[in-house]
Amino acid sequence: MASTYQPKRYDAIVVGAGAMGSAAAYYLARRGKRVLALERFGIPHTMGSSHGYTRIIRLAYYEDPSYVLLLRRAYELWREIQDIAGEKLLYTTGSIDAGPEDSWVFKGSWESCRLHDLPHEVLTGAELHRRYPGYHLPPDHLALLQPDGGFLTPERCIVAYVMAAQARGAEVHGHEPVLGWEPLEGGVRVRTGRDTYEADRLVFTAGAWNGNLLGVLDGLAVPERQVLAWLQPTRPENFRPASFPVFNLLVDEGRFYGFPVFGVPGFKFGKYFHLNETGDADELDREVRDRDEQVLRAFAERYFPEGCGPTMSLHTCMFTNTPDHHFLIDRHPEHEQVSFASACSGHGFKFASVIGEVLADLATTGVTRHDINLFRLDRFRSDRPGRTAAGDHRPDSKPRFPARVTEVRTFW
Image (tube, rainbow, N blue to C red):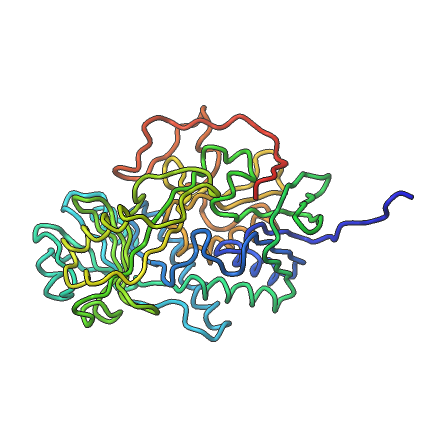
């Protein structure tokens, strides 16, 4: 006898219930949509890019001033979801963007403040040390202090969005890997390790696994290994949230980011693109090596000497990078019922709230009121010049739009 089984049907399926996916599931459910969110790991988890107790949020934006409008909305939505959760998720410390006077980090941050009329101060390295004694930057470096910067608590943000989505009727499944998907007339079919589902719309927010699931992202969403350190300060009073703004610093050793002590022992920091180790998300080294710690401690010893006490913790995570280090947010070029957010290149978590809203827009109406032109997939087509970020983010050669491959994947 022929099977009469009919897959369970939804308005939208979200693949990946981390930062972006949990927010997308909530904003879809809030619009009355029947939503299923699928997560390969637990909720939350430590295998991707949305863990580690703190994530920077900053309004001054050296990567491109056009991000600031999205950030204004992101702040609004973070405050809204923390009110819904009844839990503080966003902490304001101020943010420091610093480097040599002619560096793209300092100049880009200052330009975004000028264009968007953001309150800010410019301090020399010596002035910064007098105000915030934990900092020991070169005296000729300039630091832009923007008072709205701070940090989010990533695991709690994900939990807040998941629980808010569930309260609106969304189903959220952990430990259910997606094995494949295919377009249907008027929808999609998704096959997991447990079941098969159908939906009108499909949203991919699988982070470092997006490239395995979507052929159009092959070569454009590249996972990279990151390592974070927590070192116990010898002068802890200089590294508390009230006395230590979050930072992005461009120094001789590279570009680094960091946080005050919060939640767990230790002053937390990392180096962007750490040791430049890229590869498949399932194959990157998850262990912390002596070399990792040496690179990070050398930075702290020079610029934060009172923050460089005993090592408290070391953890790996992942960036997923595009060639120009801007985001990818778009609809699939061949299947308009499929949309995605991917490859946020190490600076995306702060936008998760507003990107969730954008993805809900794309899944319901196909358009969004937010300006996402900078993030469109077709900027990487061979017949359209790509845009690049400032400074050392420029790719060595113009990226090309990848050849189409089959969309039914079995990796995530």
